[in-house]
Image 1 (spheres, one colour):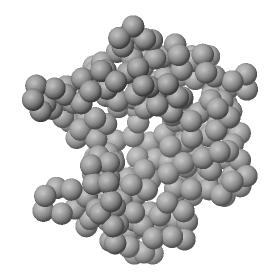
Image 2 (cartoon, rainbow, N blue to C red):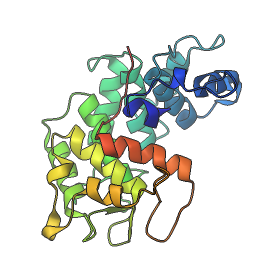
Image 3 (tube, rainbow, N blue to C red):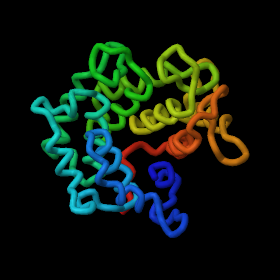
Length: 249
């Protein structure tokens, strides 16, 4: 749903046997319980222009807010706190909202010395995906001009591999999903992914294009075709360089 929305396709209008992916999520809403599931479901519904305040009798936004910890974090984890901010902003909460501000304040305190983020928080090894998610969340919370955002963007740019792509963990091989995450993070911070050519490499977007087959599907990497629907959906957000949150009016 998020990939389709990034590409300008309304997920409500993508149908097979009369049913859309939005219908599928709504039918299975009873199984959405964990913080991460609620966050991503809100993002997906809002990308399709659907309310997250009333989904078969459930107010997902209210449920998410109730999960906030006293220190402002969600589950005490950087990645879940980042996605909470993105979900709340997608649902219409302003940058000045108390929960958004508290979560952003906690997230600002969790960056590592190298400027990156670990999924759990400060101290763990910085990764591309988690840094990009934190970047998007901080920008969505109104922190685009902060030093933390500038340093996180610089961390991403510095980890580009010679093939133009980005690794999940610095020093490892590039993959489509981490590259797409990095593109979203850089775009959120106001940096052009199309102009990133570290050491003469092709841009991250060009790397993504090199993984696309004639069917339209995008490979995970040079050596793997795993989870093609998930990878292609993530790549769509990279191709379009659209950061979260995606909202359809």
